[in-house]
Length: 314
Image (cartoon, rainbow, N blue to C red; front, side, top):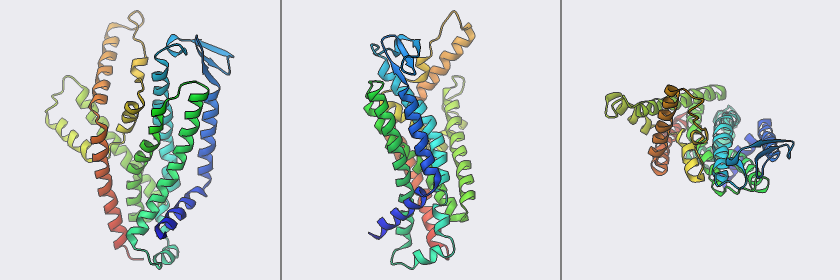
């Protein structure tokens, strides 16, 4: 019961911030905007038929409609909004979780209770996770209902986005917790977390560029070094790929037609090579291996943060 009280207290600390309600409002606006779009026998209609775009692959009679809608759900809603904008906002809202706990006066009251520092750390951490879980559930629930009721496409696999986005946030919040405990400053912790996120992006992007270039030896020194570095860090960029596989979505590159009459030969070949490279990256991502190794790296970061929290004098 004591750890549950800590979780609730941490959650309330985050929910009282205006940013929580701003995110809820944005989610409602996005869902309402989606509701203004529909699909008919010809293709896409906007503002309930005020404007129509004829596209056979987007008509309600097309076999590709579900996969295309799933692609929009993963690439735009999950990856772009929740995966980038949502993660940044969530980190801003929860960056003070540990610095505020360790502030003079507050920590004296909390630490005086019969609760170990380990449990106090875990409670605050889980409180921030509950905050993000609620945001993800509301947003995914609203957009899922719009896709089903308005678009008549029930993408049940889209519900996997909730745990996957929570998993992505946990990768990043582990860094935020470590920096927050170490510096006791929420803004510093937030900025250092952004730097760590950019580092993760650089490692994963660098590895992807190396393995997709046909002229680069896959067994070369740099490729092997980047592969080891990628394996050792939380794999944030795998989350959208895993989501696409679970949802059963088309890839955006498959939805872009290559017209021989409109694209020069060298550009068309370059585009085809890029598509093949992207497909190789997608095929190489094993969800179980990616999540397991990422959680192992996250556990190391959290153990280091917990060790620092236990050793610090208050």
